[in-house]
Length: 232
Image (tube, rainbow, N blue to C red):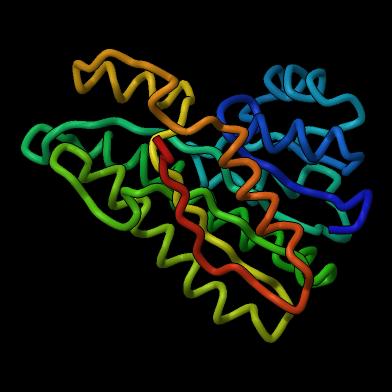
């Protein structure tokens, strides 16, 4: 990417998204950060001086178009980076529609809606959309049905979008990290009744490097899918 590229980022407050946001900010790029409310927006922009928050609740994707219509949006956008995600685990026999809706809204429908809303700006810049997926987007294990369904859907979204937007010069990449040292991983270990040891999973800095590799790839090439697994 060229200096001072503009990136729209979800999930910039923690985990892999926070690492990528920090590294993009350190190199001088412009950041637009999605925040669920104005208070959270102030917290995020304080982390990255010069950045700007756009308020929109990913848990309520039906309201995103209305929310964005009341804010100043960029004319061009070099990348849309989808890091936000939620996970709740449990067997299908015990999982309520509320649990399904929450994960599908945040992990799949909100990324689809944000992408739709910002496609004109991405097309103008011949930009890139990168989705953080998961190993669960390729294989579903017991008690992971809802989360895996949202991530399988995210893969379908990325694959279809890539074919649709290739004529417009928009690149689309899915990254599938293995277990990474994030707050989400702590929650997963607690559900599984396992002791959490960050040294046994991937450092978020390593996954961020994979993301930046895809983002910075020269325009004569495109990474469609990238799988990142623990090297230990």
